[in-house]
Length: 250
Ligand code: G
Ligand code: G
Ligand code: MN
Ligand code: NA
Image (cartoon, rainbow, N blue to C red):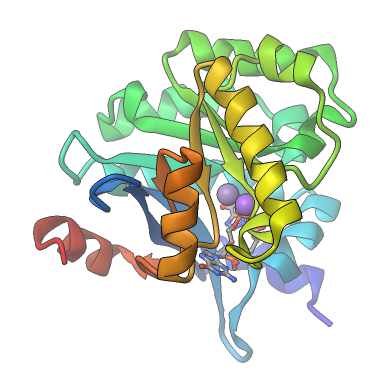
């Protein structure tokens, strides 16, 4: 079992780092941006998955300082990339409820010099399960700061179309569970078609996650997805490798 004490000290001991997975254009497979994915290099256990420690960080409140560090670190690194490359950062619902995310973002943009238009915030539908008025105020403020909002893991949770409109999302990320069994699974295809129709009519960008095969890529392109993310293009990369990929595309 992971020790809470380990987690609390990990930030001060510089044990966290970010990896970056390309978000590619569906038409030409060029990298348009990256999603920042948190990694914990534990001194004795090696790399620990965020799926294991994010829930613990949320329970213990460590997600507040950790979430702030993630935003600042992602902006710092993205500011070294060409301006056409964007950065997507995952936000925990707890973070959105219990910290002043717009203030944290403002600080991160200021100290890095990153243009706000290059920063994308990813939140899951679970944000709306216990959304307080403050949650929607924070999302509205982020929009007013010209950030883009992206709805992560779409289709897996509680979806309210009215929230989609009120928070005015720019982007929907189709969850990898719908992509996994393509192109043969016709019920998933029907769901993807419905999501694409809805998101297109709302003017949103549609990205499919977990794209692993050429057959999936072709199928999703035919369905009208705008961007792809997945092992077919690249796994999440250390910062140096992400920079190398930008400098010398495959
Ligand atoms: O990259 P990986 O498959 O290991 O990520 C596992 C889970 O951890 C995913 O659901 C992802 O959204 C989450 N995660 C990864 N990085 C972050 C982060 O920086 N902040 C938050 N809140 N969640 C993250
Ligand atoms: O934030 P989110 O829950 O969407 O996190 C994306 C997760 O999916 C990360 O843990 C990342 O490592 C993982 N991932 C990215 N590409 C692929 C892929 O092609 N296949 C699978 N199975 N997982 C992927
Ligand atoms: Mn994500
Ligand atoms: Na996802």
